[in-house]
Length: 384
Image (cartoon, rainbow, N blue to C red; front, top):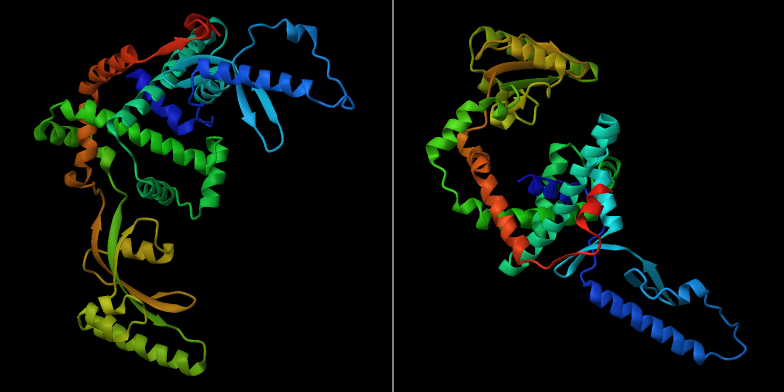
């Protein structure tokens, strides 16, 4: 289970590029073909061209490290990239491994030192490496199952994240991602999609086969109810009378104010007064402003509203622009998300302890069936 948690963390935070999907044998074949092509080209070059001398140490290097060929418009540049592990048709390079390790475990250097730090780093390297391997195994399993995530679903998830963090634009979101995770929006989008695919695989292959009763889910909800507490909120009706700017407007407003105050004293329906006298956009709703989370209304009005008893109407609240009346319609001091709204999330929470061993068994089966080849001994990679 710990490997899966590391795997998911890597998908969310890793800023490294997706590894190239070809095997070590193919990589070496491309390198060999490129070298032969270059030698043939040199023999056909005009004698006017400057001759290039191949260093002896390069001539004697019969087993160069695996290389990734990067093509440009004019030339072919050979970038030496050391491959640590081949996983089916994927590879894990030293660079991608190091990036994932550093991003996930930077805090260890601040928390530990000496022998304790060495032990923690070895554990972290093992988890990071296994997480990278498992990520490829789950991606291949998703492909085998024909699973996919629609782009619009990914976008809706991102929009929800932006909304929850009060981020207005993609540009602002990208700045936040780079500052906090070191990745851009496009990379974050890819990581989210991979994570969703993994959850689909585990959902179908593991979670769907774990039985959980309704009573277990409801018991978990009652025990952990504080985790689903909503902000304190209240509901008001409002009646707004503009003060006006000209002498005539101010005189008219003052007359309306006196009339409203008189009818409130006479116990007239506040809703009917709103429909008759209010200039607020909520006039046609009888002044109903809906549920408002505590702290979201103008302080001078919110303080008065929360000092009322349900059903009471305030005295006039004078602002720079308006005369303001509020009626407290309802108030929830300790609201919770309804059970029905969070039931699916609760189901996962209850399944998790039961699923831990099942997930590990499922992953072990994937590892056994996979073609995993270490180019450098695993013990050496973990030791660092």
